[in-house]
Amino acid sequence: MLEQIAAMTLKIKHYDQQIQQLGRAKYPETQALLKVHGVGHITALTFVLTLGNKERFGRSRDVGCYLGLRPRRSQSGDRDSQLRITKAGNVYLRSLLIECANHILRPHGRDSALRQWGLHLASRGR
Image 1 (cartoon, rainbow, N blue to C red):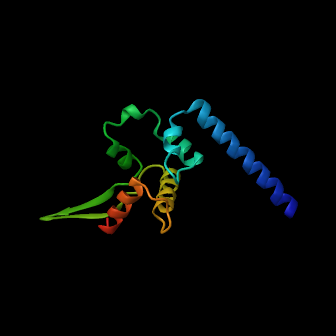
Image 2 (image 1 turned 90 degrees about the vertical axis):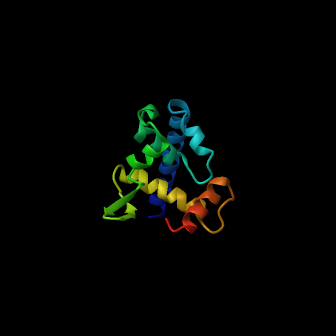
Image 3 (image 1 turned 30 degrees about the horizontal axis):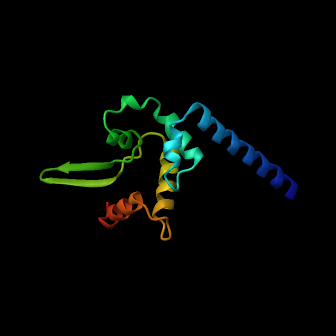
């Protein structure tokens, strides 16, 4: 069993290296995402490949909607309540992005402007 674990570990390292090389060679857009502490090669490459041509999004907020990261709305009469996120779009990428956000916002996360913005947003309860 230990030999199998060691063999699988080597395969995983090999695939990780291939993902890194692919990102550097064919998808240079991933390099900007990798500058964010907490975003790894798999998340960056998945993000770039899922979105495709970035020109098809008029605003950056449209990307959040496309991935299902925007809150649902419940509009009835004078009320306009925000509900949980819609969860539309690519489930795998959304879960990767949520893991990155959790890593950035964890109690001992590296301080950055992004982290401060996220903590401020979390303190508002939204």
